[in-house]
Image (cartoon, rainbow, N blue to C red; front, side):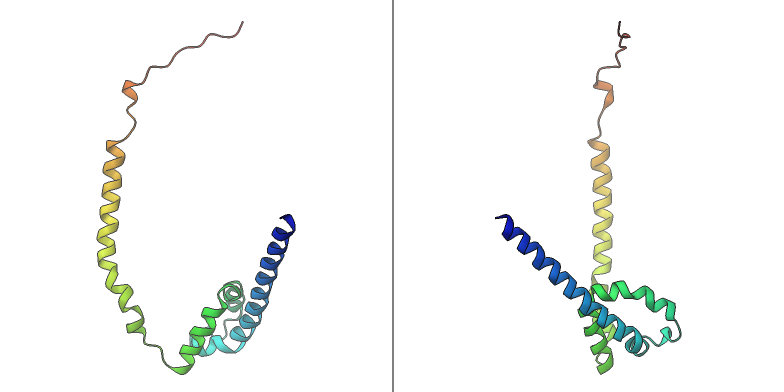
Length: 126
């Protein structure tokens, strides 16, 4: 049983290392050639690119997909965010209701210390 767990842990560690190496390769290629094509405002911002390395290493499949979409010119910003923006208003109302219910519940269910016994003075040990 213990050997199986160790083999599983070794497999997970190997998969994580492989993911990180692929991510590092994608990060190097993307940050040298791709970031200028995706976001023109990053031209000349070389220190900024170093800050992006950890994020690109972690989410490299998303970076590759986004890079591919932008290179093809298939990005439609308005359509991409329409569904999310449609839910903003209703979610604000739900958030307001949750906060109000939480506040009322906290005030209603708070501990009433008036019914608890008062403090009791202890005597010093002899």
